[in-house]
Image: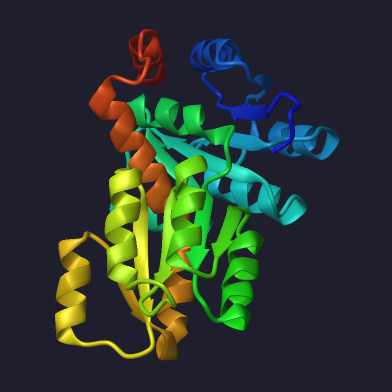
Length: 265
């Protein structure tokens, strides 16, 4: 993101909820555009530079998921978020397929936690001593819209983690200066909220148990298809982590009750 103010497109056909939500979002330092229909949302997105679109599921002229599909088709890099009065596993799967954040209006705490973290792109640290592999993974992660840091050794990775906020670290098991599991242990000590994943050329049950003990994902390099599939789900994991943090701390929710009430009218 650049230093300019982030613009959020808010789409909901309930005027009171939309007005209250827009006011609160502006108080957070964002610009807002508001729309009451899907057609109006598509028009505003075409005419303006939008960073995030927050779409209600039920609109008078079209389904919120259809609006998101059209917005992403016109602006592939646009971040989107779906709000719904009542959720379901099927709806969550549909939003996941669209790489879209998903929150229920009955509990807006997760939404505010997500918004608080939106001004900073999630950061990946990729650690591997094989240069070609490191570059390949880094480029794929960049294409997902994340900030990426790379390191070819454990020491370099620790230096980066000491000065940068890292959301997710992808660590090779065999590094020139230390074991990948040892590095993950030290990274989590440095930043307890960091999510981690271990890559290895050859796996074993013992290694899988060790990664589970560290609450770390585990993939073998000879089966990278599962890794790339996992990478597609990473935005959801980061959003869920931000939402959990917001609910655990109370997350500046002083006006959330008013929005919750108006959303149910």
